[in-house]
Amino acid sequence: MSNREKSPHILNASSNLLGICFILLASLKVMKISDKTFIDEVTTFAIVLFMVSCILSFISIRNKTERSQFYENVADIVFISGLSLLFITTILYSFNVIK
Image 1 (tube, rainbow, N blue to C red):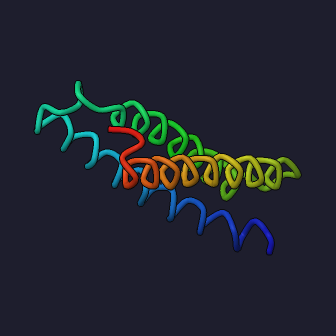
Image 2 (cartoon, rainbow, N blue to C red):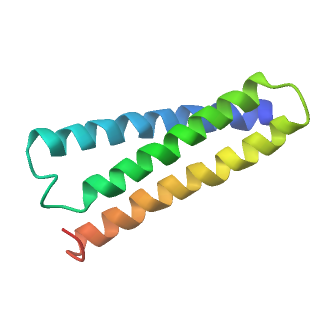
């Protein structure tokens, strides 16, 4: 898959997850439970990862040099890291390991 095919998908998925993380973080703050849980810190870190992934995939789409593939690969790794972070947090929360 070339960067013309993969980068738009990374940008789309990471921007959607970025929005979901913003909603989750805002909900925790509105319900005033962010002080009682570890999830707001994890969500903040996920927001950073998804934002970096968005920026790098956007640069990859806009850039027409050889570095474009490098940006895409880094965006892919950062995206998978953010997704894994959310998955692990969800599993740990589901099994009451974290609160």
